[in-house]
View 1 (spheres, rainbow over the protein chains, first blue to last red):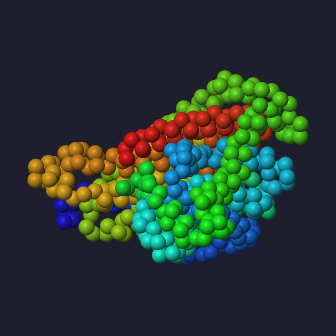
View 2 (view 1 turned 120 degrees about the vertical axis):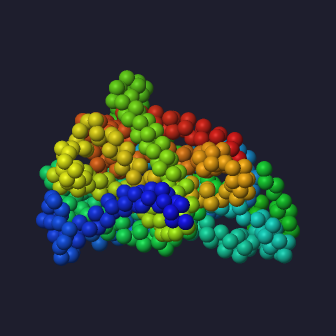
View 3 (view 1 turned 90 degrees about the vertical axis):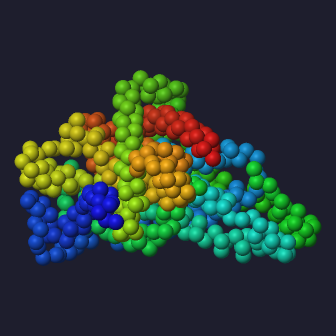
Length: 270
Length: 307
């Protein structure tokens, strides 16, 4: 079997090297000393150290920014999930006039380049002193999370059989009862997918955080970019920060891989 | 269109005239309301505000009382060569990048789909690049491509070539940010197309086999036609993602050297947040909105016609 697919295996192996080497290299460099990180030819044999990590922790309030990232991610994900599921349910279950326009609107907002929203957000938030604030940042993140959740939940709930809910209402359950007891448990995988993507997009977000925050509400991606200065780039701490941003996402990926594939391909397959 | 047969039955379950009946009759709107209100607040209002900004001369010095200047900013945008150049670069970035991602993603999906050994392992590992925070992707490649301390140039010297200042050479900067985008997002094409391949009916392939079709003929006449919808959806999603890109370019080159990698997103950011010309930035934002709207319209239409 392996011999028959020799070309395929070779191709995939080369791709794996190209895909994984940069990630490996960042993690590998992060456990060198700050001086070794700059050395060319690169040092391959060395005693692993966490010096770069301690530099990150001592030079930047890492935990504070980590908490900021976490708070904004959780708040925006929860808000989008709650509101988006209600809307997705309504769109999937009822005939609403102008459905084609609604689907265009949802699609358009999902595709919308966030750079367009940064300018008005900045000016509006400034007027009432709302820049550099975790709650306004949460609202800003919701502008891309909510359409995404509506889109996913709409697609997901459309696939669920309506007959189940009808059966429940014939049995005397109110619509709310049917929604709560029948549809919600069935929609769990849809929730999982939406939550994963909303959380990932918020965790990775950079553009809004860069322009709408100062020192108070700064998030981790902005902190990571701050290591790039005009004079010099401290590659040691940069790789350490990069590693700390990547690891949670990789663990997350391994845990939720099935849902991930489902969310990405929802609408694409079928 | 879906028939709604549920309303009468659930009405019967409730007492007439109760508050629950009232709620039940309006539930479709009530459920949509929160999302609608939030979207108006954080989407329609800011976009509308952008129009307002664009007809005023907002600079850092006129923040409190900007003078009205009409469509001047919009005219300026259309007379600005840096706008056209940025559109051209964005088109190159999106066109070449998404094409490469489709090509590599599709071939990888075909290869992995035929693998018996290590199928799951390869899939998991090949997905990793798209999970990396875009800013970190930028930093990662900035480190690897660095002139003095980067491993890429070290490998070049090992192979006997001259070192290249990739990110600060005009002709190399744009191709290199396209390559970085391809590195990260080939994963996406790979995983969606692999899921598509797995969902294909087996019969078609057996029939092709019986007819004695070669591997290439099977791909050309069976796989690709069956995958058409998956390919279109992936292309649409990737195109939208690619037009949005800001983070990696901002970190890698900041639009430089000069303006060699200044895509429309980067140009807009520079105008608004470096030059503090919010009026011009807003006018540019409106142009971008209209362009994305047109693309979405065509995308939705092609998606519906494929259904």
